[in-house]
Length: 193
Image (cartoon, rainbow, N blue to C red; front, top):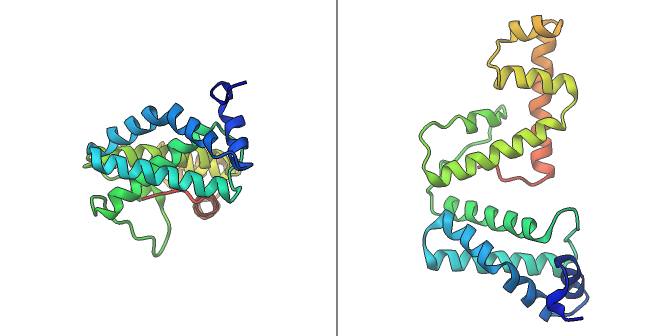
């Protein structure tokens, strides 16, 4: 059977076990999609080529260190790496606002930026998706308070009335929800800027 007929997982396994050409097949198979994704965000061929190469350097390093896990599909994993490198590029170019995480952590302040250019919209959209995913992992009572506060814009008095708890309990649940969100963001090493 030709290497070209193998699926991504099999090619990754071959590469990890020392079969260098397996990576070439993976790169050729997905190059257009990944390159076009990066180009659609950056809009410059030279910079796109740089980010594309950086993406595969990171892929190679991760595979060689045997840090890749088969949780998702290879292509979506590589796209995520490319996406993070695009964000890093804009951060280095100082084309993104810097958010200072000192004091009380509140990811929702970061999301409320009104005047967004394309790069910021891309990043904001990814952050919102990541945050919604993380919120689903919170304990039910924390998730409930957080959703009422930030997505339904209820006051803590209204939240307390709706949930049948005191205002202090509602405030406490909100505080723990934000602490837990911050912890999950750090554990999952998510880019929030």
